[in-house]
Amino acid sequence: MSISTLRERCLPYLSFVDQYRSQEIYPYFRPIEGVRGPEVLIQGSWRLSVASNDYLGLSHDPRVAESAVQASRQWGTGLGGSRFLCGNLSLYQELEGRLAAWVGKKTALVHATGFSANLGAIPVLLGRGDIVLCDRRVHASVLEGCGASGARLVPFAHNDASSAAGRLARARQKMPQGLPLLITEGVFSMDGDLAPLPDLLALRERAPDLLFYLDDAHGLGVMGPGGRGSAAHFGVTEGIDFIMGTFSKSLASVGGFIASDDLTVMDFMRHQSRSLMFSAALPAANLAAAMKALEIIQGEPQHVERLWRISTQARQALQGMGLDTGGSSTPIIPVKIGSTMLAALVARDLLELGVFAPPAIFPAVAQNQALIRVAFNSAFSDEQVERVLSAFAEVARRHGLGQDGPGPQA
Image (cartoon, one colour):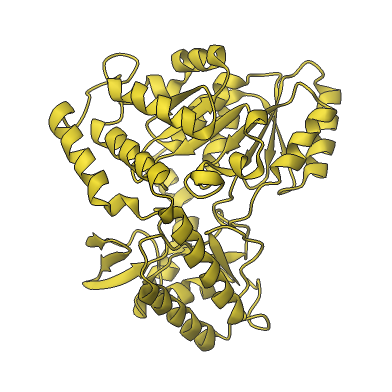
């Protein structure tokens, strides 16, 4: 294959990108020149960002920053190798112990990112001849992990336990010896809706050997008592075999982890997870930042409380404008737009009005179901929240958005 052949394969998609660039409404990869709490500096102007997953605003807490600085001074800025060989700082063990206790499990294993946690863990748990039952809207990292495992992928309708039951029953008929594992997210990252964990766990009444894997990247630090996650929210932590979480949301850092009560399986994962064994270890700064953020979450519940107060008020205000916020009941608030082009225009106008909110389009959401994903954080002042809502009211007026406005047209 020549490079020209490869280039031709790229052009159909890039024609779509070039169309948006030519109209100056391309919303992605914008250079951020500075960050100041909830504000980002873009094209020389400060804008309020509702695009970040920094739900508790701890990435700019001076205590978190100082912990990262001190760790860098003590341990350096990089480890020069994987955890398996030479990068397994004692900070890892301390953080893993705290994470496990926080989510109600006996042990945890930290990876370099949330993506690599899913990519590395799932192929350790499953292999050819096994069954992986997953919600159709799970994150791309889950799908990559499922593909790498070689297990039979059996998707079920979003948040539909009856669909999951039927799909599992049919798969078991064809593969009666296969180990079944159900994977779902606690809080879905685009629509902000919760998985019906109690209903899904009830599948064990007919399939006692069914294992459960919960990707709770967007639930930890947000849901449940003390921010301990979606399983704690429903009171079903004991029934979840594996809980996955990330540092890049509420924990104000970068990294990911898997937690479980099964020490044998987790020790095996430690020695078999390829994304852990063949990736460089996280710098000490990332570990220390996550540890300090966790300490703050556990000791200062007001951050979670304020997040919920802001988000609830904002959702009600957006709904009062006639905007469709879907079935979200969490601090992730989707403003449904429909048309990809219209979503790009709305994002452009919001930016002009001082609000940074890039649209979510296919494949992050279904075709012609584009949305503006709104996520405030605890560091927003009441005045800043009002500025964001005023901007949304203005773009809703400009584009005729609302219950009777544009729908999911192409």
